[in-house]
Amino acid sequence: DAGVTQSPTHLIKTRGQQVTLRCSPKSGHDTVSWYQQALGQGPQFIFQYYEEEERQRGNFPDRFSGHQFPNYSSELNVNALLLGDSALYLCASSLSAALNQPQHFGDGTRLSIL
Amino acid sequence: DQQVKQNSPSLSVQEGRISILNCDYTNSMFDYFLWYKKYPAEGPTFLISISSIKDKNEDGRFTVFLNKSAKHLSLHIVPSQPGDSAVYFCAALGGGSQGNLIFGKGTKLSVKP
View (cartoon, rainbow over the protein chains, first blue to last red):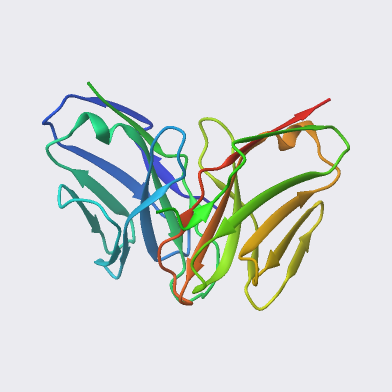
């Protein structure tokens, strides 16, 4: 039973570039959430996708956008990268129909901006 | 303004003793709380959760206590083992939805042999 998988593991970009991160949810899950974890902080919610639509969004600028595909996998896109976007980006999946169930996380993508 | 606070950045415990990790929250609408454990270079792993209708939940060596009036929860690990050394995050969910988890900053637990 495959868990949440994310790619790539590491990525180095320069300021102003654009990046796309990918996530495949745990088998049987239909909801994908993205989080940003800066050094020394807890994960911060970016947005959540269900039925190929953004269902909730945290306090992140429009430079952060996403997509969910019919197979429930998801992408996180960040445009016009800033130094402050350097962080660990975590994807979590869950089953929408199950209330109060834990989200399951992937190992993340470490993004470094030079 | 942090809605979930873990005021101890680190905790050191001897193997075999009890580890107690604390978490405070400010939003009374939170109704589901979770603890995650994170090793370096891995994603957070779900450990245990508690619904606001309960005040205690046990799973093996792990017990979570919830004090709604004080808006406080704690995770007890007994007996502590060296493999428990990790960063522990407290998280909260509100409104009965699958919405966003709100995390604390984490507590780094070191269990010494």
